[in-house]
Image 1: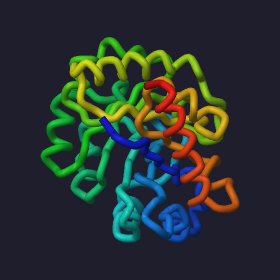
Image 2: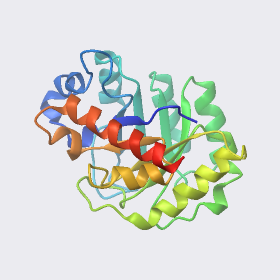
Image 3: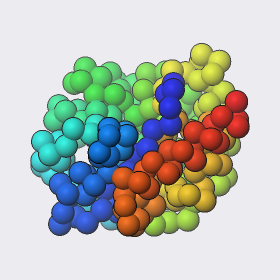
Image 4: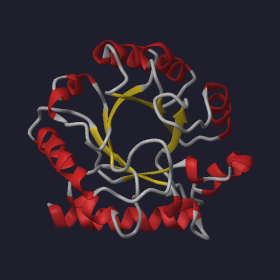
Length: 230
């Protein structure tokens, strides 16, 4: 769906005491920086970790022009997710494993002004959700277990991205294929070759001396790998 690979730096790897500065650091002086900013919302229930919530996201929204990509790793997204859309978040992603009414939730997110994303864990199969995904704008394939940053990339999930890419290319789905977990200079090319459109990168960006340049480097790798696939 995307003409150019999208790079979404993950604020989970940023300095939480300096979030406004950290967002600015990936902006790029010439408009070539991050495409989205990935914000992990964790509730210590759906995943064991606890991060930030809606009040912080509302503040982030006021502090950057980069579209926010909120990944809700929370219980009961049917109840809570629409608030993030109402806050102006560009893309709100919920977990297939947590949503009770994923089709209705997608419609509610879109009605509130956001793109709707559906995420699946590494061991969750794609097939039960192919019809549900017709109502979504983004499929987020987790390439680590959700909950903590810095985990090792699980290459086996790329078969899911390949199947999703085939469904997009044949017109069965119309969405952005996104991947999250362990994406860096060593793994982004294989993900791009497997049909991924949007790459969430945490420590590969915020662990670099120049985060904006790291974004550009990852994008260049993804473009080259995508061209090789075609």
